[in-house]
Figure 1 (cartoon, rainbow, N blue to C red):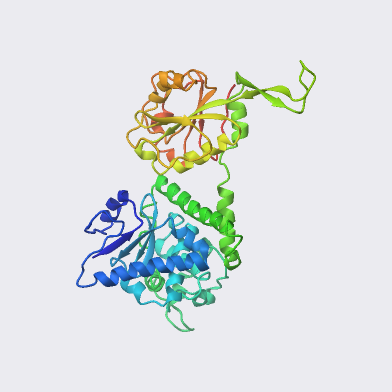
Figure 2 (figure 1 turned 135 degrees about the horizontal axis):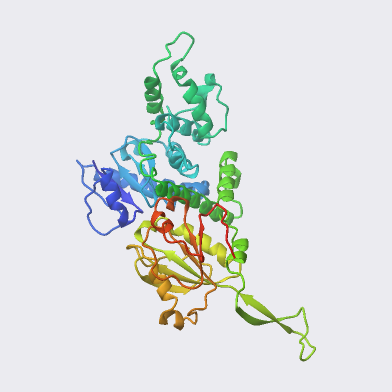
Length: 460
């Protein structure tokens, strides 16, 4: 088995090797090529062809092309057609070069759109406890209605009209119908045998495989943290593509299916701040002792009776600790998105990155850093020690924070000596399992707990 990779991070190699996609690296280039019974040239050509087709989507249907900018590409003979999978950190498109090379241009673009729609509609994370074979069929029925020009033999909703399936429904809605009426799928005309439960699944799953393979769905997202991260990343790719299109003065929006537009709206709604930080900070960081004078035209000067006058502005100064240990690698985008929402409330923020030791520290200006320090174990005490250290003193913040917000998955030893300010521990939904150690700490009156999306009570 051979494969070519494009646009993949070095950290992904172990993931692909565990999946059986073992390649012989020929150098440090971003594209690997291999000799396989004289097929090296054809695979290189297919990779070039794949990139040309993605560029074509970027020109003619830019939404799909923009999504592809954040998706890795792998050419592999380990699958019969094409498919998308979650590697643990990013989405990856797998393409069989022999299959892809035989398709017409319109069919190749339709297959690419098909796979992108699986990502955007987050089908990989919506399998959950459902029968994977039935859900794969339902997912293909849902998105194939949005992809004109698919190869011959691809699943079509017209194949299921005798089951009463309506158009433009979700994969979950189709799943429920298929689960109840599955054996009837083998009835081509009155009098045909219904078949067994296993036979209809195998029959139609094979038909679904004409376009794409879904064998890995649910495998890499079955852990809570994996599912949350994969779902978040899919939404992030979709919204980034939408925002990129907005800079093109609406170009391409006229070709967007209504179901896709509705899904983007749904993702946008879900991405609204999980925490009402305005109310939260009003309660958590009350009674701020920091203030500064600012000029204002709304009142005259008391001393001179002229404009501008002065006004005292109360400041909230918050230390935000971000857990950058190895276990939070996939959660950092979520952490910094919530951090940005805190910053938008006009709060003065100083960020400290920490795994087993404090790494970088800096004032937050609203931009997510491109790289962060850490990647090791987890310890909470170093942040609290830093707050009283010379480093904090050099930043003119020693002992002067109104509160500390700590973003973490909760997997760390109990702090020995917490600071005097109030602490808000923010755990992601998938951090509940990791939070056992943190949750078992001795109760502190200054400690408060918050899982984004749930209310929190605070005593004053």
